[in-house]
Image (tube, rainbow, N blue to C red; front, side):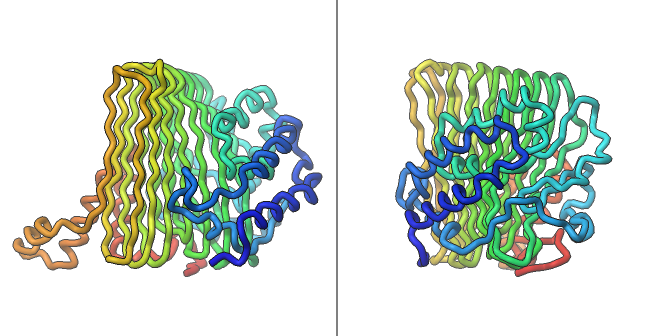
Length: 454
């Protein structure tokens, strides 16, 4: 039970903002600072959402907010190169690699990336100053229609993160890998802000890896805005692998123009408390969004995936598939909403949520939703919660496969449907290995970290 209620915590955070406003705004231009006051007012008005509210029906945010954290208003003084204490769990993955530590862009990142000409990779704060017109055109534009309280909290405190711009017509042959590291000697609350702009007719893949390198209570509240211009193709893979003392709220807001194609795939391998908010607006005709997620939880972990796909115009497609495997006393939730607006004729929208509970104590909550105001559409949604298929298990055992190995095979096959949609072959293969290790209980530590916290 939380030691502090949500209203008291809200006012503590607002008071922290007011007392440190000058430090928060220091070094940042007006385009970032002028939206803070409206954001903190929105956060004050809405507060920390209560469990049972429409969007947080099955999740108590005070599991994250109800702890004591420190807060840093300046970039960490890194005494050791993060690259020397971290190794990617996908060693064969050839990427352009960017590091962020405690929400701050690592200064050496991007120095020798040799990116194709015109691609911009900067810290959030540097980009706001160096590219004011481009930054202002997109910053904070895709949150406004949602007015999500936790995103407003991020906007009020935002100081750094990543800025990425892919110019028109550029096709990236290699993915860009963003590694978010949390480390330090004390509990820490982090607000990280990212902005990604994908130009017309361009193609890019981004892989985001979240890791903890210290055995502390961390709370990362990350907001990422993505603009995908006409006929662009953009993949966004999120690999969440943090220890059980961590809390994470990750919110991504995607705005797609006509003929664009997006693929969003979230793999939650580990984390004490995880909430993923995915908002996709199909704002141009013939746009397509593919949204996938896989969560593997055990112990007393909790993972909640919330998705909102907004079919704002006609002739757009969306496909959505989320799967969860729950063990021990773990809990998980899926809340998926598809909105088909009145003028969005010829929409095709499909949503599915499938879940396996391995114990009687594991709990899964699911709430798929369709809200349709057009009459010429093809839409479906559904959800299942069950256990291992006993007939399939019997069949495998009758073929001489041991009971434990047969269960592993069935669970891996269950997960593979999500993994198969990864459009980076080596990542898909390695994902499969990581999932298998996680299912076998061999992946309780972050493989890419030399610290090996619990």
